[in-house]
Image (cartoon, rainbow, N blue to C red):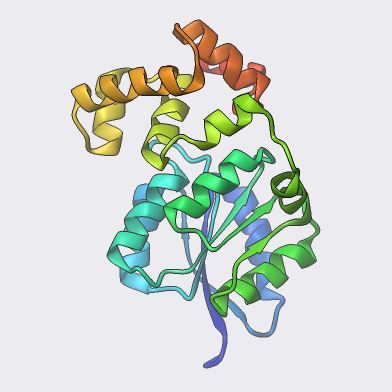
Amino acid sequence: MNNSIRIMLVDDHAIVREGYRALLQKQVNFEVIAEACDGAEAYTLYKSHKPDVVVMDISLPGQSGLKAIDRIRQFDNQAKVLVFSMHQNPSFAIQATRAGALGYITKSSDPEVLIRAIAQISENKHTLSADIAQALAMEKLGQEQSAIDELTVREFEILRLLLEAKSSQDIAELLNISPKTVANSHYIIKKKLGVNSDIELTRLAIKMNLVNLLDLVDEAK
């Protein structure tokens, strides 16, 4: 397997990773060499295993996949990351690309799409699943969608954590920044999105499919 593509899987669901691994190991030139359940573990394992391709979910406990991509790319600016996510909103693909991912594939894609994307990423080629490519190619995403796409990777990550009802202190610790930076970013996010309160911010996030109302109910339990 000297010419195989060495892959690291990052997903917080063990059963899901098992399914990915079974699929990928069937490919004669693929080898799954490491698995991580969160962003911190992904960063640690990347440094020790140096995989050819990282297949990364971005919805992870604690530090998200976006933060993990950024950390991995800071350690190795040649790292090749493919995001494999349930999120079909093009904003997630835009932020993943800004963080350093070479590709974005949705989990609703056929298995062949994932296999082909890994091969393309290994050759340093950019790739998107058809549904994301179509969404990004739309002539007009609308004013609200465009505003969300103007958020920086850090602002987008802070928004995600705010929507998970994380405190400023918790967010600061997760992102290794100061609570003051979180507060300033919180203000800037609301200003960029044209909302005046956290209630309006949450309503906008639900409207733009950045968060599911059922997810918020689960967080409150």
